[in-house]
Length: 443
Image (tube, rainbow, N blue to C red; front, side, top):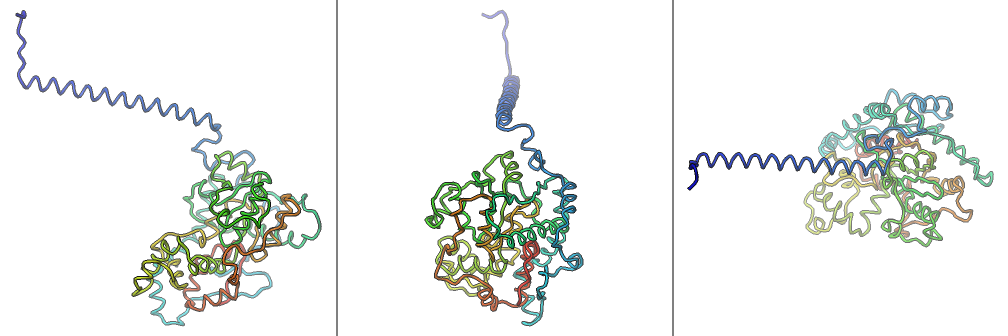
């Protein structure tokens, strides 16, 4: 028999078990925190090994060595005395950017189809006009936000030492005008978009060719397929641009994109490689995208975009159209484009260039245009020292039997739209028209 008896009532037993349970739980929580701290420390050390402190993840928008500050950039541009200036009237009113010596016609909202039609369209497009005005007025706020973090990159003259003959003088002059115009526009009006954009998103459309040190920003429906063929040839992935299929270009994943590099790799290439963007008249580009994606069989755009567009914008649509999404009309497509509450998101084939390539944040060394694509492209190949036999291909990538989308074709499609709708399309692409000095369409 024990020297004394220990008798515990049920209440004491319960309290004892409860205390031991709480103590165990606290010990478990402490150990879990300690393990997480140890793991985080190892991860941070691994990150430090992969990148120097200058390129830490918290410094996405800090300037790399050699990047000009905003003040130095503006002083540099001011000293360049560009020959091509943004018209002063843009400061006072939202019209179009006028080509020197060329008459233009400014679109206005009219009541040609009655006030009721305008009200109906307003319901479709929601607060589109107000959003556009806010976007244009907010451009300076956007630029100021990035100026505060010294995002602006170095700007430099083109290296023409590799140009082999004197036949490119006219194109040289045109190119300098385009570059000066874009730089002056960005300096004065800061026409870009989405201040929330992440650095990796901003460079996600830029293709990299390291051998010739090229950065090419892809603008769909502006010669991008053939440009990617050229990059593949320059990179040694093919012997001729004419031997590369459409699927190999767009689905082969043979080319690198700038967002695939780390921060140091991105900044180094932005500051040392030749950066090119090729653009197109916004209305032509829009019609070209519609014809390509909706007037031919397409296993992606019909079920994804077509079905959603027909369901929302076609009254009493038949079951067949609702099921397969084919037969979208241009007017329905325009209503989708202008709708602030689209049933399906935007697509790169009709997204604004200002949101694809960020021309006021990335200082492109070369601004080509689809309207002069071959001569611009071949001059660019001279600038970067491409093989002499390499020429930009002039074939139509898909639907080769179709007439190319041009001003005449565009007018046929715009006939189905009211003047209000046409005006709203112009408003939608307003920044692209201004940035690249395209004249407002004659409608």
